[in-house]
Length: 449
Image 1 (cartoon, rainbow, N blue to C red):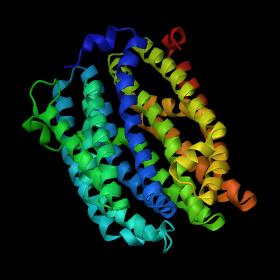
Image 2: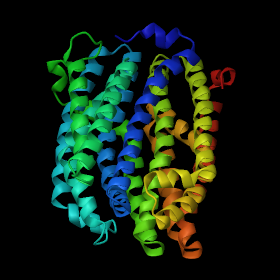
Image 3: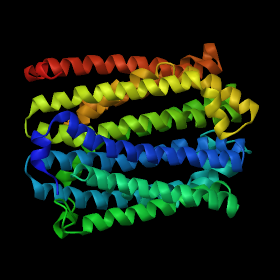
């Protein structure tokens, strides 16, 4: 059960550590097993398989988008309602979330399977990479409802006061995936499809763990029959708050489509494969920061609902410090040892060369991304969906997409890589201005921020 006095009274630094650490471990572990999958695929199947896997990113981002539309909004709503002492509304939010994830996830799976080849061709799959991408995505799409249900309800479990249990569920899936992936890829010789089967099986076991938690009457927030009656007001609130992360992932899909087009034009399949490796590393660091913001969210959401604004801003300040340190670490990895990273995936000299140069250029302003992520998730945590959506749009739609369309016309392949760095700086500046205005409107913030 959630200790409400803990969120309201415990020292913010210690509280943030206790809530963020399990979330960071969980998100990092989840990202790590994606990296390990790619290493297994690169070493066991080949460089073209890595390129094929990179081509699936737009579809996967769309799948994640619909999952977070519900899951992220539900997590924020549950913590806010608990801070307002509205337990029944939090339980109804949980039930509505479960139904919405099932309905939306099923629809996405069916449409994805019907139009899979058309989508992959749209995303610039070549005759060489299409078979790899198709084999992987067929399995992933069949398991989409399971994945969406697992990640969505796991987020609600974390937001309702069980961060350690949410971490364990992620670690469980990671461990099972890491065990099964090499068996399926190398032992059974299922190739890239084996990696997909390992992912779906591990997420199924993770979902069982989460469902057992919510079926129990012990947790403060759990399944109750009345919670499964769809409510238009609850759905509206979930979608309003979940809109920001939804937009992020939809735009990430659009960005990947445009990037794949530019990479195919100026570098071919190996440049697309290099992007897959670069994206894996940057995504790992982003997941660490995301874990931090997930730990921040229930603290900020509860105290904002309870109007304890000094604790809200103290949590924000500490989160920014930690996120900046994490982002700077990612920047140093990209600039100092990109060749080591590339060769861990595959030793093809062309792929390695593209990856080394691309990583250094793509992540040369990565150290500012932490501030931007914390700021956008802060506004999500306090229910200010429009501001969160604005900040989400700033990096992807307002800055990155135009840069991808303009810079390669002058700098060719280097322009594709540099576009991300330019966008990172512009998004950081936008977030700084918006947050500065918000802080200025809250006098109590000056003591803690």
